[in-house]
Image 1 (cartoon, one colour):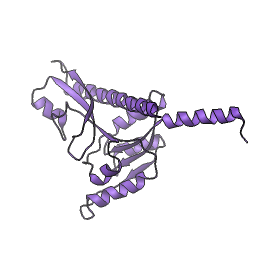
Image 2 (tube, rainbow, N blue to C red):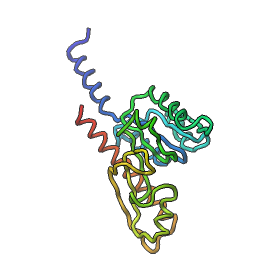
Image 3 (tube, rainbow, N blue to C red):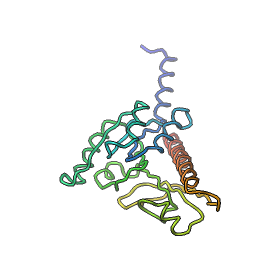
Image 4 (cartoon, rainbow, N blue to C red):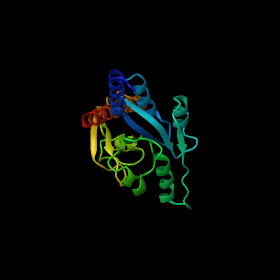
Amino acid sequence: MLTLLEASVLKKAFALSNQTLNLIVFASGNGSNFEAIQKAIEVKDLDAKIHAVICDKKDAYVLTRAENHNIPTHTFTYSKQRGKVAFEKAIVNTLKDYPIDYIVCAGYMRIIGPTILKQYEGRIVNIHPSDLPKYKGINALDQALDAGEKNIGVSVHYVDETLDGGEIIEQIHFGISDNMTRIDIEQTLHYMEHALYIKVLKDLQREKKTQL
């Protein structure tokens, strides 16, 4: 039988573990946002745990990044013959094995359909490199630069069934100076993406903590 002290210690440990934000990352490419989030977790800047990475590209570098951190990966190849419903049902069946507070889309290049949305409504977030609702879709930075924008935005939003739609959680912006090269702009954009995503996840973790 546990002593009162041992029971108290276990209770506190359980409470602390419940405060941790349980995440699944969806990604399709390089995975720099995944890497930034995981590093924030490792240095204890973010109280969260990435339980797995879901990917739709078997050669995506994010898979290597996840394996380097000993995080499980699951790759699903989309087939037009099987269709989107079957594709997403396979993902949902895998997700059932994990505790999930939020699905974090980090460069996931597919529109999430109703099969996944129904299971995790209000618990899927995405980051997009534009001042939404401007410049949705791919090549958002090119769209902004072609339009002559002098301020570039980054948005984190909840995911719905539309392309880069859903309620905006938070946005940040940075100005482009005349002496900035394209590489300078892209590097600043990535830095802003990483910082904003981590900030939003911290806010979501604090929100979870207050609800316990």
